[in-house]
Image (cartoon, rainbow over all chains, first blue to last red; front, side, top):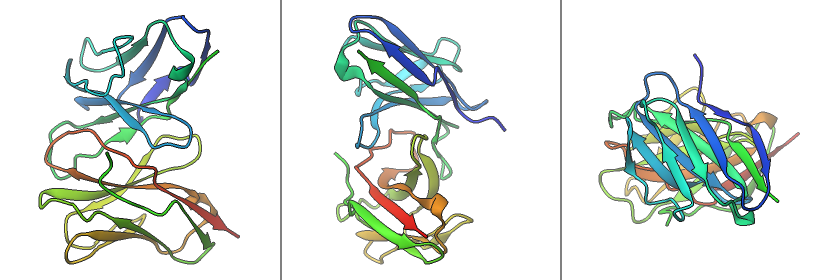
Length: 116
Length: 111
């Protein structure tokens, strides 16, 4: 079946611009996660959705970052007034969201954001 | 902060077993050990997880010490395609909490 997909795969923007990154989770997965990965580091958590609501947004670095999931499926990560330090790979993951023994997060390929 | 420590890098000859260690000395009784790997330019891929018993699936085996303070991921016959960064993570499985990644072990499989 289809995995987690993310678009665009690459995004180049200029400092100060606004960007949107999209994530399509695996069908039926109620939990959706955003992570950010800088070069040479492991992924860092940003935000987690259970259905339409953000259950944990403690990883968002500042108020320039915002994410939505209006219908409980597709999610969009929005970054305002981009800065060069926002350059990273943005990863999306989804899981069933039931919290059982087989709760596993499945990751998409990521969006590589470069802010010039 | 990550609750695990792993060697920065390891090498393994193709066809040999790759044994990747992980130290998680502060693990709690309700925390599982998870392993993910990340091949260059791809998202992390789930490999295996376990609580206290050894586990095996089609990808790997997981050996957890009796005191649960450390574990070893075993790739029985490493191939060049197993070259990746391997992350050991501890988490409570009965919730949907975030994963906390460390810097992982970079495994290089050579011919």
